[in-house]
Image (cartoon, rainbow, N blue to C red; front, side, top):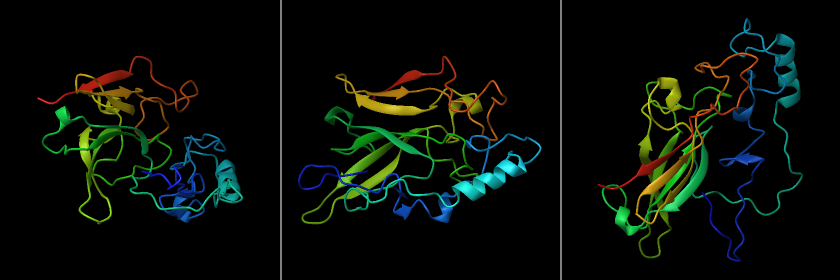
Length: 227
């Protein structure tokens, strides 16, 4: 989550060479191989990476550590107001109208869409805790006197598993990518739909089912209204 510089330009948090305060060269970001890696040659008999030993060795030799994209940052790198979990993407935000205020939603609050992972790496939570992503989250803002602005972030609408709904055979979020409030005071969520991936829990494996392909007929618009 960002803010503007005093001159009106957006601030800069280091993308694509910094993630959540950390340089991309940190070991936590090193690739571990997997069928979705562009250097991986698929070999189902070689878990957990499912890459041939030769291609896995190439990944480790060419992509570890991850190289910087920019020679120099375009401006001073500042810390963001808040960060989200790994493998989740903040994709859309809108402020709630007064007619939507109530319960956990405070005056001036915002809802945002959080798209989930693409199956490239292990889950970002350890069971039984649900994964982070594939959900709508709520931000309440609090500022008293001259104190710094505080953000209170909490879940608002999600699947129980935290994963794509189609994996569990339920009617829920797959990939919410945007949220906007309509003139009726309801929130409308654009859900891109289910996406094929090469994760361990995918239902689509094989040469004809490459990663990041939308499954036809799974996109939807959700409507969330107050009672």
